[in-house]
Image 1 (cartoon, one colour):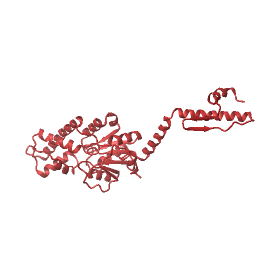
Image 2 (cartoon, one colour):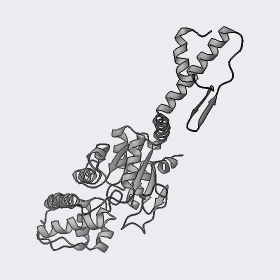
Image 3 (tube, rainbow, N blue to C red):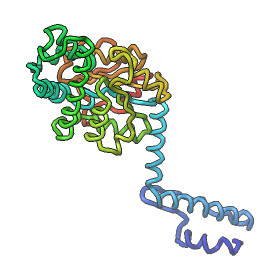
Image 4 (cartoon, rainbow, N blue to C red):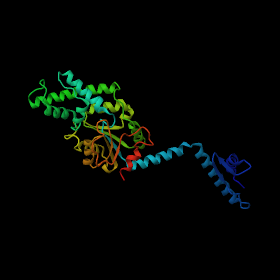
Amino acid sequence: DIPFSHRASIREYLDAPSTTIIHTNTKLSAPPPPKKSSKMKIIYWSQLLAMTVSTASAFTHPTSFVRSKAATTSSSLNAALEAILFDCDGVLADTERDGHRIAFNRAFANNGIDENWSEERYGVLLEVGGGKERMTAHWNEVGWPSVMPESPDERAAQVKKLHLEKTDIFMDLIDEGVIPLRPGVLRLVDEAIEAGVRLAVCSTSNDKAVSNLVSTLMGPERAAKFQIFAGDMVKAKKPAPDVYNMAVDEMKLDKSRCVIVEDTHIGLSAAKAAGIKCCVTKSSYTGGEDFTGADLIVEELGDDKEGGVTAETLASLLG
């Protein structure tokens, strides 16, 4: 009663004492075949064959189920969280105390400037955003070094020169591996990349220094996923929102689907002024700052996904 074209396939799959097909923990039981109608028998065996082949094929490629589930999770996450905008210093790496401060002091010494910023003094100066602005504010307060020019324009030019030298020294420190990434940064970045969440660094530091830090400490493949907005790309630095607004405009982002990761009150103020949700991860200098208005405050992002800040954690802030 079964067409010839069907017989070989049916025999291949069903030449067993039972019409029950078992694969690992999955059991599919077929009802008994009809006893009379030849036409019904053909339909029965054809449908059973189709079900069997489909089941066998699915279990032959079990990773397809895993990929499908991962793709669904990633798609859902990406639909909620479009981008993570990181600050650099203090967020990606705790660079201020053992990176920028050291680089400033070496630049001072190289130029005959009798200045050495202590950890305590540098902590106070961090209330001023930007390296050139930081030097200017310090010397406006304590007096300008005798080796510096008298003219405001010449002073500004010398400060800019010092800052460029300081940046080169800082990049050397990064290359030497003196400053590691903070806990959880790589984990969170990898989660975002896997989920298709876009990434950017928005910093007041020099763009070359930021790019070098990201590339050196994260590797070129991860670095290629980042857009960098830093240094003097905007007129007003944090706490003004300009650098975050620039990132949103350049990347064509929806602010309601972005989260900023900051470590300072100044950075938080910039995030709030931009109208974007903000997670604060405290750094060595900022533990005692006022983070009122932050959407999430943590000591660190955390290497352990179970107890750390995940891409899903950041997405939940958008609700």
